[in-house]
Image (tube, rainbow, N blue to C red; front, side, top):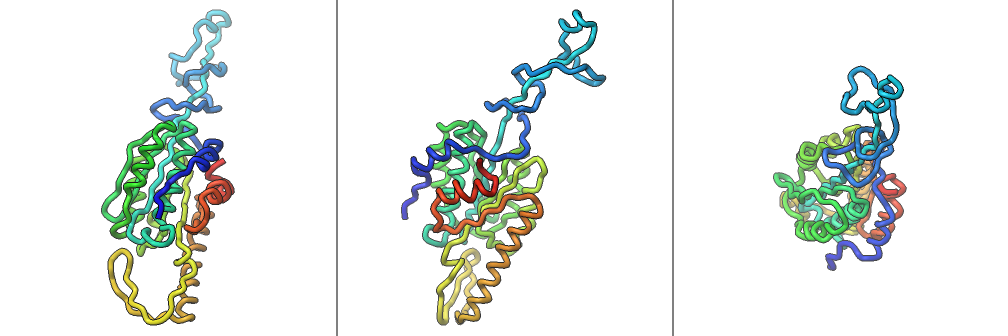
Length: 293
């Protein structure tokens, strides 16, 4: 299986896109994008009347000398946008053709490159139960190589604890921006304890739900010993048409529940079968969901 993460054609298309972040704020380090919000940045915008409590350092004393009135100089603030992506790397992600993990890596790389090409700051994480791997914050297209190298190094292993991974992500990345979780959501704890960490009003929360065709429409038949992908527990079952229908109902319930939870709480939700071409997901589903524009 090829481990190609991003091809040049996809990269060229991503350079024409950017993150669709609803609410942005100036960071401690000035970014390279000019905001239309006025503050105390570097480019003069206008004057406004001085009000009690304003910083007197921004008073234009030359205007006061001419007009005998106090005016504050107002500047454009520059945005320091941040994209944070958390990839589920639990053992269950190592399934399908292509695997769910490879699909997650490609999605993470696509979002990262769109952000890097727009001079946004990017943080990547890959987590499983008890461990989260992190790549340092980077900005600029020249950093794509190390982003891809980090993603290539990520291996699927261990159990799932999305809640702990997202909690760590939220605490380590408090700067407002876009926060993305990519997972199959096969977590016995459920999805709500994890997704609550994406609900800060100053963030744009995004959920990318990755499943393989073999999971969406399984074709198993007969008597089988099924091994839990994460804890190794074996269960002997007889796969019948009725059992498959029950499984499919359960999967549809999970997908519908996730989608409804995200819709009601303002999170973007995108369902991604692993056999869907990356360009269709990026240029179609992610733009339709308001993740990219």
